[in-house]
Image 1 (cartoon, rainbow, N blue to C red):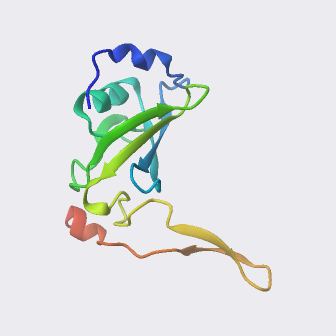
Image 2: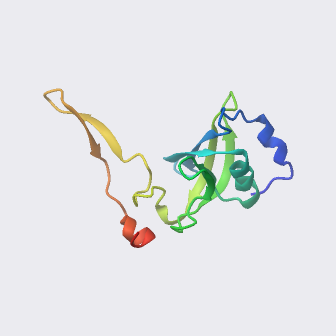
Length: 138
């Protein structure tokens, strides 16, 4: 996917830090895979390359999803919300793993309430691969 008109990013409402939240959704199943941030450069790189690119707030730099793991996100469709302040990327998740923990998505913990009313987070599904298998020993 590419664009002839990179000025489409002009319709986006980036926050005071120049960032916008981006939701990655499986283009076929509709499953939400992850949420990340994009700056204008990451958004435009995503359009030009057809691969999801995000912005790391901790590293203060852009990163291509899957550049070290091989779990690329191939862009199939881009949408924005009514206010233009959230991006939705419909993607094909290569390798079936979107989360750095080795799971198919980042939303693997759910809140459960026990009979006594106690609440706790439980893992809904196991990793498909360990982080060591994906990234090697760090």
